[in-house]
Image (cartoon, rainbow, N blue to C red; front, side, top):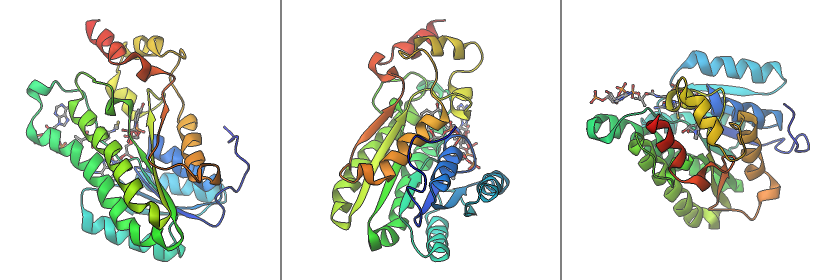
Length: 266
Ligand code: NAP
Ligand code: COA
């Protein structure tokens, strides 16, 4: 689907997108490239990254791939340095890498909780920290992909909720610390988004229809709609916006935990 933004909004800029090999992260990488940005894709599985990079190149863009786990801060730093050197700059960072699964807190292992917090929260810190020296050269924009679970109590997702809440707080803290370097730090908090691994895991099978029916706007969102929010936050239209979280959730957060409790009640 075409963007509502004028084309080439980000021409000449360079972006790095974690989780860029699939789902929402892949959509964001393609959207930034469609706006003229050179894009580095970072995730664990090289083949998924290469597929997205090939689509970007086929559409006339430029892309590089880094098969790196965001939990490994030294590897992250190498990848960010390499991308910034290859592109000659770094202007935009989008943290979309994440893990989630349904698990009751009572039976979730310490390692299960830690794995999700390490990927979402510590991974986001690793990437932001590595990007700082490059972003501060000209100023830049960081967008962290959180979730409405960051603020809405959600059963079976305490690990992801805690991780995303940490990302939301990190977004505001970095926005304040790095404002003087002209680096804006914002978050996009999607609600249920169609055709994603996230919703396949969180509302599987017949839960999907029941969840869809509970979204105030009456449907799941699209990956495209999340991408448009990210492009907006990276664009000059958002030049005075930092420390903000933009909900892209069809009003779902307005209902609090209701939809999730309904799913569990059957
Ligand atoms: P997804 O396709 O599974 O995206 C997650 C990405 O993160 C994958 O590309 C994965 O690639 C990468 N990743 C996971 N662990 C990683 C690690 N340790 N290091 C580097 N990369 C890692 O799922 P999605 O549903 O599109 O979710 C994308 C983002 O949107 C996530 O931040 C999610 O929390 C957020 N979100 C999604 C929804 C939704 O409705 N789907 C709603 C709210 C928020 P590899 O496995 O190859 O590493
Ligand atoms: N229920 C309960 N615990 C689970 C689980 C589940 N569905 N899936 C994984 N875990 C636990 C594992 O048992 C392990 O704990 P243990 O060592 O005490 O047994 C711990 O989580 C780590 O699992 P592991 O598979 O080694 O982690 P990983 O680092 O390879 O993968 C995950 C990270 C678990 C988050 C994995 O689901 C993943 O890679 N997700 C990325 C894609 C994704 O989640 N997309 C949706 C984004 S919204």
